[in-house]
Length: 135
Image (cartoon, rainbow, N blue to C red):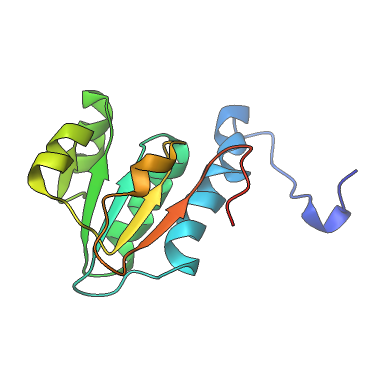
């Protein structure tokens, strides 16, 4: 059962695969960026994992403030897309480790707890782990 206040009608002109994003990626990714530690001028935000949630988080971080946004992923096609969407850098995990990346905010959308470990002292990790409670 779903409370009627949680139901949003979607027009017949919206394809199901597009509408499906509204229930997860478009809410979770931006929510992770804007509610935990909103981006501000001068900070570095890393988005790890470039699926629907990660790309939505990346787009909001790029648009939200004059901050440096780094994308992290393993697929070259998604790294290219991240650069096209405004990421200052798009790195594989190995490249990020070699570069000593230490962001102020890490949005972990890859589903792996170690993905949020490369952050600056006092930096904040935000994890999206499907089916896992994050305290």
